[in-house]
Image (tube, rainbow, N blue to C red; front, side, top):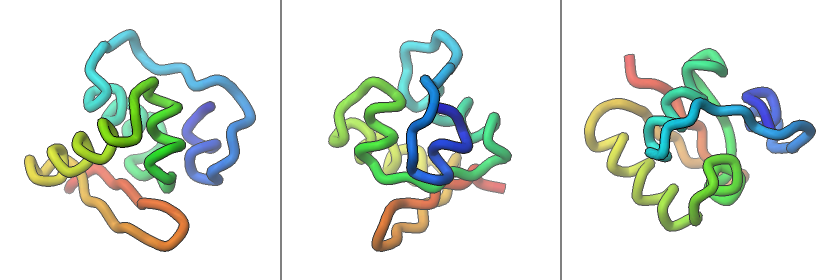
Length: 84
């Protein structure tokens, strides 16, 4: 899976992220690789990051509360952007 896969919600290739063990750091790296924005459901992100959907939910809210990302939830997924 790559950044384009997350934008489209369709996995076509394995994701290649840096070796960080912290899923929050991996998400920020993914955002940087994809131009600062991804649109994906939490289950898709969970699979891409190798964690549970509950972990992704908590991580997204922690990063948003810290002012690192902006979340826009929609019917078919969440738009995640790096904060300006």
